[in-house]
Structure formats: structure tokens, C-alpha cells
Length: 175
Ligand code: HEC
Image 1 (cartoon, protein in one colour):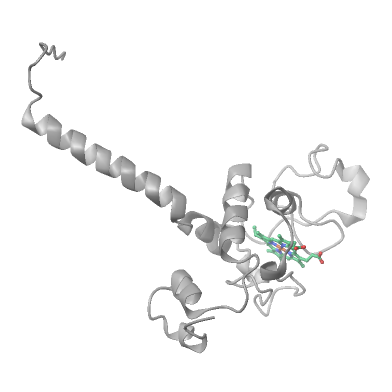
Image 2 (cartoon, protein in one colour):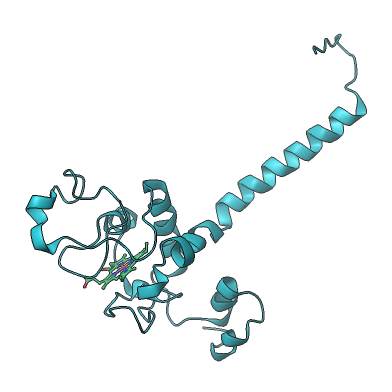
């Protein structure tokens, strides 16, 4: 079906409505992409399960079952590129796993192959591996929510677990 509009002809009413709705949807999607970190948070907490070792707030207080010793990400001094590298490649010789499934299959990680890294090769993660763009979203989440932050706040807890989550009462309302 083809529509031919003569110049000056008005768009049918319904079309205008559809156009307005579409514009609103696009605008709100763009706005949420800027200030909504729920995607990164979901990757951190659920898909990649970083929280299993690092804790939900990144302070290093992970699950009792984890091997412990995970870094306090709130005190990290790494920049975005370094964070992405460590997420994808892990840290050789430590319990920090590599989230790029193909890490060390070529020289993409620190210029080292499997043979180069040998016994120090980081393990696969306990949860899912990540695509590079997912690792970027996690790095942005870390930078926005954890790095350089002091004590965990109640607001932060409620952002992760919902407003009025009972467990969040133990954190001070203000830092
Ligand atoms: C199996 C446990 C485990 C999991 C799962 C894990 N980590 Fe780690 N991570 C560690 C340990 C242990 C270290 C400390 C390594 C060391 O000793 O240098 C670490 C270090 C780091 C560092 C370096 C911090 C710094 O400043 O040196 C970053 C960043 C990091 N992890 C991010 C993540 C992210 C993001 C995830 C999820 C995508 C994740 N980790 C999943 C155990 C884990």
C-alpha cells in the first residue's frame, strides 16, 4: 500500500498520534540510556555474578562460599580501559577470572597466549562469560556506582534491592 501526499495535505490524525508516541518513546529511551545503569547492574549481579566474589556493593565482601580476597572495587584506581581489560582477561595468578571466553586463545590479553600464561592462566568465571560490549557496560557501572565511593549508603542499597528493602536499614541514610 502506498500513500501519496499532496503538498499541504494534512497527515491523518492517527498518524500524528503515532508520531508523537514514537517520539516520546525514543526520547525516554535516550534519556534512560544516559542515566540508568540497570543494565550494568544486572550484568554485575546476575549474569556475570561479580557480586559472588566482590559483594553487591563492590566492597570485596562476597559470598562466604567464594574463595575470598576479591578486590574492594570502591578503592580501585583503574581507569575505564584498564577495568575492561581486567574483566575480559582476568588477572593472571589470582582468583580474578577472565570473562572473555576466548581470552588467551590468541594474544588479545596482555599479549599472552595460553602457552605464555601457563599455570597462571585465570579461570573461567563461576557465572556466564561476557561479550566485550557487556564488559564495557559493567566497567561503566563500576565507575558510576563504586569507584571512589566511600561507605555503602542506604540509597545505594535500595537502588540494588528496591525501595524499603528491609536489609537496607542497616546502612546510614546519608554517607
Ligand atoms: C571468583 C571470584 C571473582 C569473580 C567472580 C570476579 N572477581 Fe574480580 N577479582 C577477584 C579477585 C580475587 C581479585 C583480586 C586480584 C588480585 O589479587 O589482584 C579481583 C580483582 C578485580 C579487579 C581489579 C581491581 C583493582 O583495582 O585492582 C576488578 C576491576 C574486578 N575484579 C572486577 C570484577 C568484575 C567486574 C567482575 C564480574 C564481571 C569480577 N571482578 C568477578 C575475584 C573475582
